[in-house]
Image 1 (cartoon, each protein chain N blue to C red):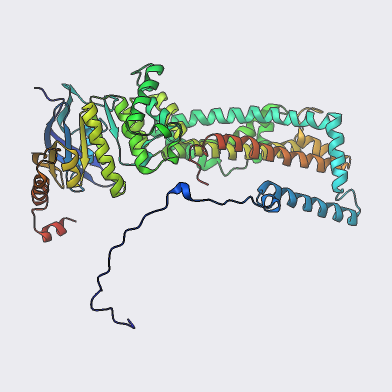
Image 2: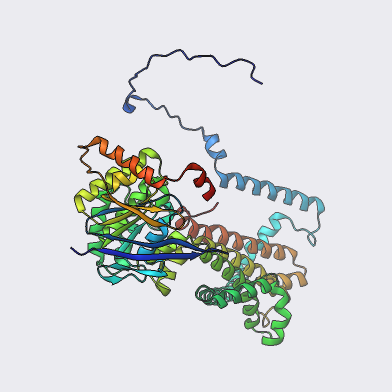
Length: 258
Length: 295
């Protein structure tokens, strides 16, 4: 089986006002169709930067990123992103228009088909009632659901999610995770999901890539536990194992890093 | 200092479980506000009341002063206004002013669009725009009128020139700063859709920066309107075809002060109309509806 996405020895650097920062160093992984691939790491491990590189916003200084065999060189609608920020929705468009707009401007579907598909995906994220509202009238969780519907309606090769639930309250976050998994059961999309929460990684992911901080390097690539809940202890054990791997250094050393 | 020591231990308390009343069982009593309260809550009515009081004070003062050459009474001004409107003199002057204004405003906005497009696409263009606005924004447009008269003579072109100057800089400055402050997330969203070049500007940047653009258009309008009236006071274009400013000067020269007041009245009304009706309507239909208004 060939991987859908092939990230090979990618080193990423970006410039701040007076520093050249290496965000990741020779990171490599493969994502296969219908995988829920989670990139997990503490803040500063370059996981968001890595996702932006997959999105095509950033060119690696070393290594290549291939989607279906083609090198990723710029952003495009075959890799739809869902961001953490609530302002990712276009405020001058209603929920329905926000979902329809990318299908139209990318020339993916004619207007009638796009409208139909928008309705379908808005239904899927349970926002049928709010379809004609403007984003500023929605709650944070609803905005993220619109962003997810918008990205999924494009039926991209891969869905890129950059801590989409990090700005939500704990209860809403759990609900959103469940809904996302339900959607996956239904559609079987492929996604990369970036998070810094170990529990979220285990819950949402089927496969977990662990990155170490400053700069990000691959520490491990693990299989998550099955979702059936047949092994209630497995999730807890995996969580402890990941925690140990990420925070293996003694506390003093960690402090020195910050 | 703590005055009382915290207790050494906390008594265990029983849990409690309660049943909630179903929402449908609530009788939400609502009562209409009294008529007087409804009237007092209406901002427009309150302001109208202030206007009436001001008009009354004006009328009383003018009568007490009893000098039509300094301050005509409110009623005389209204009469002069009505007479000038009925005779068609005032509407004609207003039309002449507005015509010049629209040409200058339109040209100013157009040039601003070109400059901003240049500034958005190239770094040199951005430096150019910032330098030019820093230089010319503080320069009152009316100060350029003598120069314009030498360059273009007694033609509407001179007026257009100063009008363009008064519109161009605030519009370009606000549009540019609006583009610059579009959030990185929204930019990435636009790029994610595969939008590039002019489509990206038209479909993402312009709507995202619309609050700033609208502010620029409003400031530009206010500057242009004030500049136009001031310029017309100095300069009536070819005899007999001047606008409102010219109407003010000619009536002052023949000491028809109620007419001067009527003209000032018209200037205020047009200013209010455009700022509170036209721009307000655009605002409620766009940025307020989208939740993008800052105030």
